Image: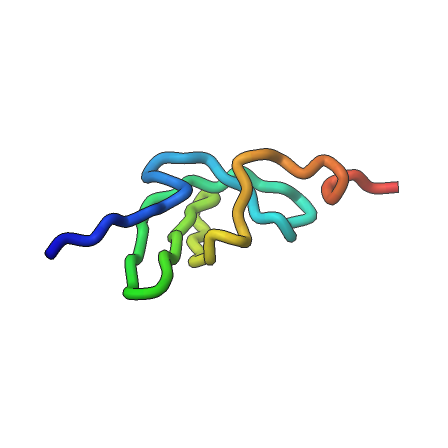
Length: 68
């Protein structure tokens, strides 16, 4: 029996980490699908990292990137 994968982000999407004070754009290049979760592998330049869906946003958070 097949399973439906309900991912919020797709390959090639540009996303932002909700906690990144620099709000660097990152590209989704890999989805790792496990029985109870999806992990997203992101690239920002030559830096790669893996994150849960709740850590990501398609919108820049200007409040976190604003400095006094």
